Length: 230
Image (tube, rainbow, N blue to C red; front, side, top):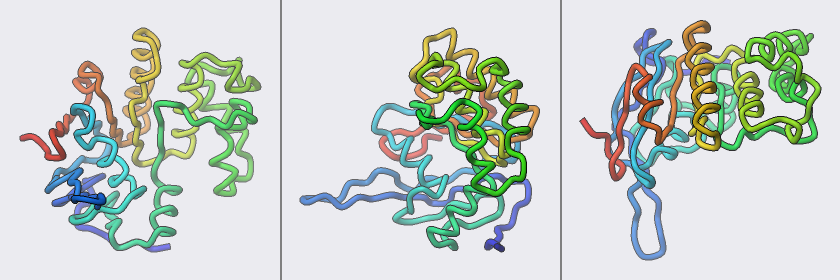
């Protein structure tokens, strides 16, 4: 599958004049308006702002999970607006990883099986080897056969991070990755994300309300009422 290419090989994500509107029964709600920025490959960026400022909507548009009302998003040289839904899904499967606040692990699968799943879906011959390796790197070598209900919140998030990184994504989107964790556990999870970002060269994009976490990123993108602040 070949994708439409944009101009810069050094830019992981380029957002141009992005806007999102939703039609309500009595008016049109503007969620995002005229948002533009770029994130270089291998860098980390935090999307911050008050509740309702448009952070999660921006993340969904950047990941191709939603479509904009105007403007566009390029990921790794591919213009999302040039792809249909199947094309965007293929691009995510090949190049993008996700970590969510509520972990989104499958409860009927063990930690090892949860991490193996994306490798199985793309047809890898021996997914258990890579899954065991990344679970060892996140400190869960002795928890491979535990189910999510048998793991602490921090351990579940480590499994989620392992699942995201096992496919070697070029871009990782993390939506409030420490939001459901206590301060100490959240700090350890943040350390792990930045360590993997550095060692694997993955471009890391975080949505967070935690200013300390945002300050650790190379770039802060601050939203207010759907607009990007200078």
